[in-house]
Length: 148
Image (cartoon, rainbow, N blue to C red):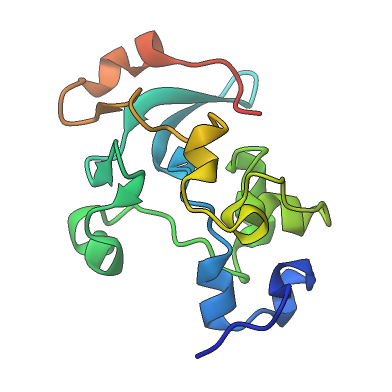
């Protein structure tokens, strides 16, 4: 299926399935484990990444079958975005478009290069640790500043 020119400027509800998938910038931030503090409702991102995230490519190693390995993996969809947008990174294309904001200049749909997200320092490339290596009770030690 071909993608419409400048499809990313359309409302999310108007995107085809292929366009929806193509909106992802490949930063890997959504694959970081998050902690939500019940007393404050604060959401904190950690450097601890899903066991399926390739820390260099910032891509899921088993994207199509990820729920087989990580049943709790959230599927970002048009139906769920109202409930999910708040925990997406502020730079996420889905969150930006949900908020009717433009894509940043480093997004590959604007720049023309899949490497621009990494070159702009907007990906998790090279600084994550796998959840397989860090016990969950230690995740608080890996909290990072807010992702903007």
